[in-house]
Image: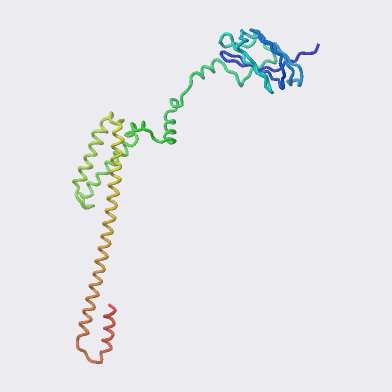
Length: 290
């Protein structure tokens, strides 16, 4: 009687299904008999011993539902999907503790009860790494409307420093470094300082209010416009001073030239001997050149 060859069979399970992969290639019309607790398989194909007739019988640990179970033939293997009658995890696939040598675990599909519990406990990256997620989100998408509440926490320190530096606008005219009065800058800087230090910084409940964002935005825009206007006025003043200096220099040169011509002409009108007429001609030339 010829020896019956058994193909390698790889199995895996979930809580409700059992999967089998029969390692046979080029199987045509397999002979399959599926019962509640038994599977009989026979087919010709290429297995571990080459092209031969392969068969196996598998007695299950628990009952399955033949009506809900099915199989599919592929070029490289035959796959079975068997529905368990009662959901649950089997300690082993066979009813006997000793499993056949050709029956192996399909590690690609294998899942245990612990793995399913870990999958059920889905983790949220936003909860696991909130700071990193928010940083990446800001870099990719920019700040959102929800970021308005963190305005004071983000730029409150620099705004206070800039506000303190604005007191230089009051001290410079007081000490004579710049021209102009100090009363108007004092009122402006003092009013902002009272709002920033006494009304906002001293009250933590105000730090997350959206009005802080709009207040800082308006202050920044005002300073940009004011500083640019001051810069333009200074440049215009310098240009006017340069033009005035140039005009004064040109007028001084013209006055000196006229004075020299007047002196020479007066000197030439003075009566001198005829022998000095050559010197007169030289003086006339000098006067014309001046």
